[in-house]
Image (cartoon, rainbow, N blue to C red; front, top):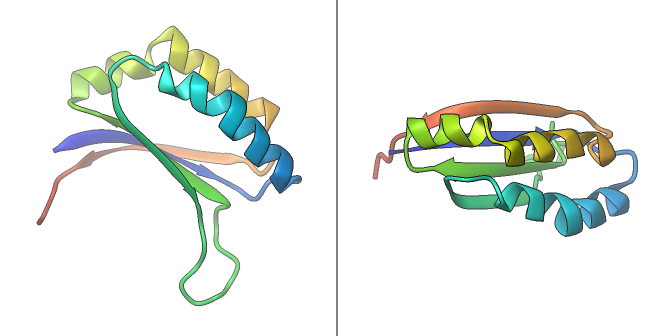
Length: 103
């Protein structure tokens, strides 16, 4: 079991600018969040060829609920959150999830 923050990015106005800022600025900010055990991200495509609801999805993993809460309350997470306005022109949907492996 782990806990994660999922960050779903809407389609940006300028995909190249999003990609550049995300990889060069935002990833280092997010990687600094204390308690983070894994951080993944990727661009989204639909399985039926239609326009997907998101441009990209990032997942920030924490070992337990206390680590998640501490990470969310940290100055590093605040800095990463404030950075969203610098590149996420398509909007952002975020949620937390307790993940349970079923295999």
